[in-house]
Length: 360
Ligand SMILES: [Zn+2]
Image (cartoon, rainbow, N blue to C red):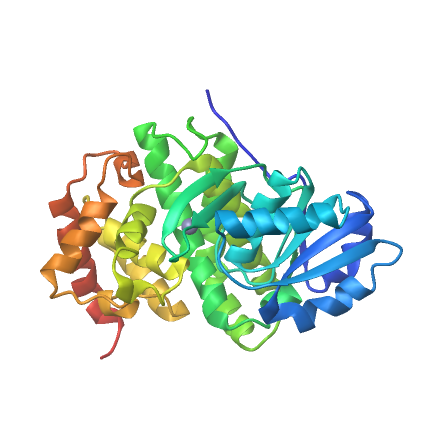
């Protein structure tokens, strides 16, 4: 059995939020808009011009917890909306996706940063009141994903680079799952389409990522930004959800155990997880050189200190490895057995290798 899941419709390009009215009216006439407070001034003009659609705007800041989801779902139901559209980063999209599911409403994912491959997925990460990850909800994929690249390039370039880090790992992890017959998020094997999407994601990022990051830093929604945005949001989204995860995300999960890594983004930690995974098995040095130099060029971490870790702290490395290798972890989708000792060695080897790519 093999499974693929997708968003129902994907729309992307510079200025596409001007098409929000016609896009939303395909789904319903009463809209509940959950908007990250960070982008409220940027997004409100688009929402104010949606007549004859009726729109309730709800500014939001915070994490995706069971309590927030219940609150937002109740407000959305009270507004008599049939469509919930969420504008913002991962937390807002996760709250929106979960609340729309709880309220049986159509869901529109409108990422305002391209910082991860979550916008197209059907997965929400839920946190407890202390900000610690409490679980993962498997929900419906969005009815529409709308990505305005003119909005994406207004966010700090670090977000765009983090999305590249998350997307760069996708093919390597999907390939591990394919070779090991490991399960994807849906619990079955992946599809040819997901592997092809992941491969195109990797090639697009490696070919055009450096230029896209330069353009994004300058606030320019160029064709390279568009291509890499599609790679990190759509291709990586299909690639990870229907192709599966491996060592890079497992090491990311290990890194999150250290409070000092909290100020680094998901995609930054995944990128270092990918670099470390290149030392779990024999790999051509040309591959390591390619990925380390790419990460250094686009501002992704190549050393442990780049994500708040001290390479000399044995206890910290042991903590990362223990979490990465816990039973059921994605690292066991690699096509060879992985032990905690192997992970500690790989973290150290990657850190040492990265020294050549980052001047002190
Ligand atoms: Zn990820």
